[in-house]
Length: 194
View 1: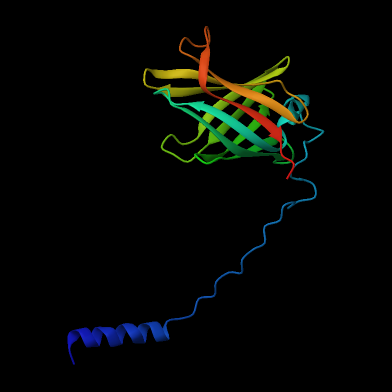
View 2: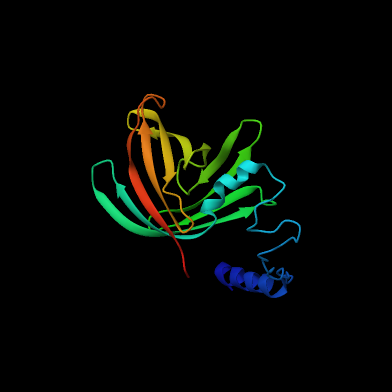
Protein backbone atom coordinates (compact mmCIF):
# COMPACT_ATOMS: atom_id res chain seq x y z
CA UNK A 1 0.00 0.00 0.00
CA UNK A 2 1.37 3.43 -0.93
CA UNK A 3 1.64 6.45 1.34
CA UNK A 4 -1.10 8.19 -0.65
CA UNK A 5 -3.50 5.25 -0.19
CA UNK A 6 -2.76 5.08 3.56
CA UNK A 7 -3.38 8.82 3.89
CA UNK A 8 -6.72 8.52 2.10
CA UNK A 9 -7.83 5.62 4.34
CA UNK A 10 -6.80 7.54 7.47
CA UNK A 11 -8.70 10.64 6.34
CA UNK A 12 -11.79 8.58 5.58
CA UNK A 13 -11.63 6.85 8.97
CA UNK A 14 -11.33 10.24 10.70
CA UNK A 15 -14.36 11.63 8.90
CA UNK A 16 -16.43 8.51 9.55
CA UNK A 17 -15.66 8.52 13.29
CA UNK A 18 -15.62 12.28 13.89
CA UNK A 19 -18.19 13.44 16.45
CA UNK A 20 -21.33 14.97 15.03
CA UNK A 21 -21.71 18.55 16.21
CA UNK A 22 -25.27 19.77 16.43
CA UNK A 23 -25.92 23.09 14.74
CA UNK A 24 -27.97 25.58 16.75
CA UNK A 25 -31.50 26.04 15.54
CA UNK A 26 -32.00 29.15 13.44
CA UNK A 27 -33.48 31.79 15.75
CA UNK A 28 -36.48 33.72 14.57
CA UNK A 29 -35.89 37.45 14.57
CA UNK A 30 -38.83 39.31 16.01
CA UNK A 31 -39.69 42.75 14.68
CA UNK A 32 -40.99 43.81 18.10
CA UNK A 33 -38.60 42.09 20.53
CA UNK A 34 -39.67 43.87 23.74
CA UNK A 35 -43.07 45.28 24.61
CA UNK A 36 -41.46 48.11 26.63
CA UNK A 37 -39.00 48.98 23.83
CA UNK A 38 -41.12 49.00 20.69
CA UNK A 39 -39.43 49.50 17.36
CA UNK A 40 -40.84 52.34 15.34
CA UNK A 41 -42.25 54.47 18.17
CA UNK A 42 -40.62 57.66 19.47
CA UNK A 43 -40.26 57.67 23.24
CA UNK A 44 -42.78 60.23 24.60
CA UNK A 45 -40.62 60.59 27.74
CA UNK A 46 -37.49 61.45 25.76
CA UNK A 47 -36.25 64.97 25.14
CA UNK A 48 -38.77 67.07 23.18
CA UNK A 49 -36.12 67.58 20.48
CA UNK A 50 -36.67 63.98 19.37
CA UNK A 51 -39.79 65.21 17.57
CA UNK A 52 -37.51 67.18 15.21
CA UNK A 53 -36.80 63.98 13.30
CA UNK A 54 -40.41 62.71 13.17
CA UNK A 55 -40.71 63.92 9.58
CA UNK A 56 -38.23 61.31 8.30
CA UNK A 57 -39.77 58.26 10.01
CA UNK A 58 -41.22 55.80 7.51
CA UNK A 59 -40.33 54.38 4.12
CA UNK A 60 -39.32 56.69 1.30
CA UNK A 61 -38.85 56.40 -2.45
CA UNK A 62 -35.99 58.71 -3.28
CA UNK A 63 -34.89 60.30 -6.56
CA UNK A 64 -31.23 61.34 -6.49
CA UNK A 65 -29.26 63.64 -8.73
CA UNK A 66 -25.51 63.12 -8.24
CA UNK A 67 -22.57 64.89 -9.88
CA UNK A 68 -19.16 63.18 -9.74
CA UNK A 69 -15.97 65.15 -9.13
CA UNK A 70 -15.23 64.98 -12.87
CA UNK A 71 -18.65 66.50 -13.67
CA UNK A 72 -20.48 63.35 -14.78
CA UNK A 73 -24.21 63.55 -13.93
CA UNK A 74 -26.13 60.57 -12.62
CA UNK A 75 -29.82 60.21 -11.73
CA UNK A 76 -31.08 57.15 -9.87
CA UNK A 77 -33.72 55.87 -7.46
CA UNK A 78 -33.20 54.51 -3.93
CA UNK A 79 -35.26 53.36 -0.95
CA UNK A 80 -34.86 54.81 2.53
CA UNK A 81 -36.27 53.06 5.62
CA UNK A 82 -36.30 55.10 8.87
CA UNK A 83 -37.54 53.91 12.26
CA UNK A 84 -37.16 54.65 15.96
CA UNK A 85 -35.05 52.10 17.88
CA UNK A 86 -33.34 51.83 21.31
CA UNK A 87 -36.46 52.50 23.36
CA UNK A 88 -37.58 55.17 20.90
CA UNK A 89 -34.53 57.36 21.50
CA UNK A 90 -32.47 56.71 18.33
CA UNK A 91 -33.37 57.10 14.67
CA UNK A 92 -32.20 54.19 12.53
CA UNK A 93 -31.94 55.04 8.83
CA UNK A 94 -31.30 52.28 6.30
CA UNK A 95 -30.35 53.48 2.82
CA UNK A 96 -30.68 51.03 -0.09
CA UNK A 97 -29.52 52.23 -3.47
CA UNK A 98 -27.96 50.75 -6.60
CA UNK A 99 -24.53 52.19 -5.80
CA UNK A 100 -24.36 52.24 -2.01
CA UNK A 101 -26.20 50.66 0.90
CA UNK A 102 -25.69 51.48 4.56
CA UNK A 103 -27.18 52.75 7.79
CA UNK A 104 -27.17 55.97 9.74
CA UNK A 105 -27.92 56.37 13.44
CA UNK A 106 -29.09 59.67 14.98
CA UNK A 107 -29.72 60.55 18.61
CA UNK A 108 -30.26 63.81 20.43
CA UNK A 109 -27.54 64.71 22.94
CA UNK A 110 -29.06 66.88 25.71
CA UNK A 111 -25.68 67.94 27.11
CA UNK A 112 -24.34 69.07 23.74
CA UNK A 113 -27.69 70.55 22.71
CA UNK A 114 -27.66 68.98 19.23
CA UNK A 115 -28.06 65.73 17.32
CA UNK A 116 -25.14 63.32 17.05
CA UNK A 117 -24.81 60.31 14.84
CA UNK A 118 -22.82 57.98 12.65
CA UNK A 119 -23.03 57.20 8.97
CA UNK A 120 -22.08 53.56 8.45
CA UNK A 121 -21.48 52.63 4.82
CA UNK A 122 -19.18 49.81 3.69
CA UNK A 123 -15.86 51.08 2.44
CA UNK A 124 -12.40 52.15 3.52
CA UNK A 125 -13.47 55.23 5.53
CA UNK A 126 -15.44 53.35 8.15
CA UNK A 127 -18.09 55.12 10.27
CA UNK A 128 -18.33 58.90 9.92
CA UNK A 129 -19.44 61.00 12.90
CA UNK A 130 -22.13 63.62 12.33
CA UNK A 131 -23.80 66.45 14.23
CA UNK A 132 -27.11 68.07 13.45
CA UNK A 133 -29.62 70.73 14.42
CA UNK A 134 -33.07 71.89 13.45
CA UNK A 135 -33.50 75.53 12.56
CA UNK A 136 -36.91 76.88 11.57
CA UNK A 137 -38.09 74.72 8.66
CA UNK A 138 -34.82 72.86 8.06
CA UNK A 139 -32.83 69.98 9.51
CA UNK A 140 -29.08 70.28 8.95
CA UNK A 141 -26.61 67.38 9.32
CA UNK A 142 -22.90 68.32 9.44
CA UNK A 143 -19.95 66.05 8.73
CA UNK A 144 -16.24 66.53 8.18
CA UNK A 145 -15.22 64.86 4.91
CA UNK A 146 -11.93 64.32 3.13
CA UNK A 147 -11.54 65.69 -0.38
CA UNK A 148 -8.71 66.18 -2.87
CA UNK A 149 -7.79 69.46 -1.16
CA UNK A 150 -8.01 68.06 2.37
CA UNK A 151 -10.80 68.03 4.96
CA UNK A 152 -13.92 70.11 4.43
CA UNK A 153 -17.33 70.61 6.04
CA UNK A 154 -20.16 68.74 4.34
CA UNK A 155 -23.81 69.46 5.06
CA UNK A 156 -27.06 67.74 4.25
CA UNK A 157 -29.92 70.23 4.40
CA UNK A 158 -33.45 68.81 4.62
CA UNK A 159 -36.00 71.33 3.40
CA UNK A 160 -39.54 71.62 1.99
CA UNK A 161 -40.59 69.20 4.74
CA UNK A 162 -44.17 68.00 4.33
CA UNK A 163 -46.05 64.95 5.66
CA UNK A 164 -45.42 62.88 2.54
CA UNK A 165 -42.36 64.51 1.00
CA UNK A 166 -39.19 66.47 1.60
CA UNK A 167 -36.09 67.55 -0.26
CA UNK A 168 -32.48 67.33 0.72
CA UNK A 169 -29.41 68.91 -0.83
CA UNK A 170 -25.72 68.76 -0.04
CA UNK A 171 -23.45 71.72 0.60
CA UNK A 172 -19.68 71.99 0.99
CA UNK A 173 -17.64 74.57 2.86
CA UNK A 174 -13.88 74.86 2.61
CA UNK A 175 -13.63 77.72 5.13
CA UNK A 176 -15.26 76.09 8.18
CA UNK A 177 -18.81 77.11 7.30
CA UNK A 178 -18.25 80.78 6.43
CA UNK A 179 -19.20 80.21 2.80
CA UNK A 180 -21.02 77.24 1.25
CA UNK A 181 -21.24 75.97 -2.29
CA UNK A 182 -23.49 73.37 -3.84
CA UNK A 183 -22.51 69.82 -2.95
CA UNK A 184 -22.47 66.84 -5.26
CA UNK A 185 -26.01 65.57 -4.73
CA UNK A 186 -29.62 66.50 -4.11
CA UNK A 187 -32.69 64.35 -3.64
CA UNK A 188 -36.45 64.36 -3.45
CA UNK A 189 -38.13 61.89 -1.10
CA UNK A 190 -41.74 60.77 -1.47
CA UNK A 191 -43.41 58.57 1.17
CA UNK A 192 -43.52 55.02 -0.18
CA UNK A 193 -46.94 53.55 -0.80
CA UNK A 194 -45.84 49.89 -1.01
